[in-house]
Image 1: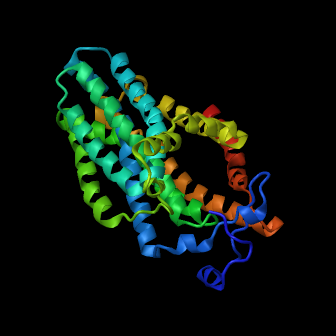
Image 2: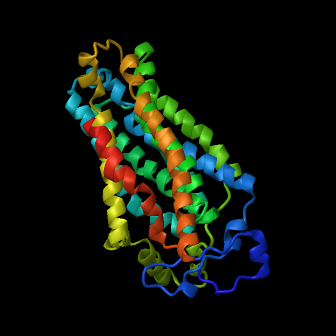
Image 3: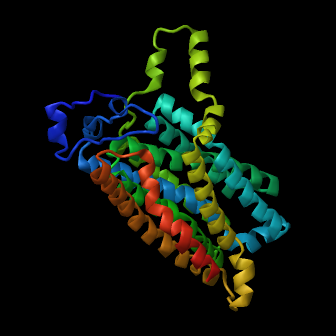
Length: 362
């Protein structure tokens, strides 16, 4: 949302610090400033509630990607197949999570974050129950894929809701809390799976996930406000049917998501994030078959507990990283008088260049 260079006195009082002087590459500074009052619509408690709901849903989405890993042998036995096939089902899950970004991103922009959250959680609940009841391997694959298609919505909506309500100079700290849930989910999933299959059937894993989704629904319905600044669907009023369809297709065209990668900075972020996720799942997936024999672990619970080690690192890293990113942005504002959207990326250079590769080699 563009504003004039001089902010009103009301906006200045809402945020005593200097206004956010953001300058994008090749943009006129007066056309790219962010109006502070936009981020003052919600009270601090409401913002924390939004962040909490986003973190819980992000945790649920990511937990479901790895909860079956500790239960692979038991699922193999049920469907009389191989471990490779069950691991392929997890690959299918992650693939559909990636594809669903083409749908949920535009949907949330057009109709709002709140309807998207309610729809995705409700569908996640239904398809997770379908997975728990799957009588055949093909049905298991189908419902896992359908569940995955909703999971990405939690990640997209969580980050966009936080971006809607937090000023850019304090946004990363809140994103750190959101990512605590997102990052800890993949580590906690196998622990849950290990506990479940040690004492009961693997199907209980999905019943527990469905229970989490069922608990999340009333919180979203009653406590989550609409955070979108201006719903695009309001622009459809007064238009004919054909015009509405044309506009909806133009707004929701999936190719627009791909075109975003034409920005070199976003492409680099995409590659860096992909490498981190690949590194995480490459290490987490084979633990039951690789580390169990090596360290003489005899139960699914023992192997599941191994996942808590990277999980602790994800929790600490997300908290430190968010605050460090906000500090970096404010430092650049003090240095040059305005910020570039890319300034936040400087906060992770040392970690990506040295700490992550070094820890992998060690």
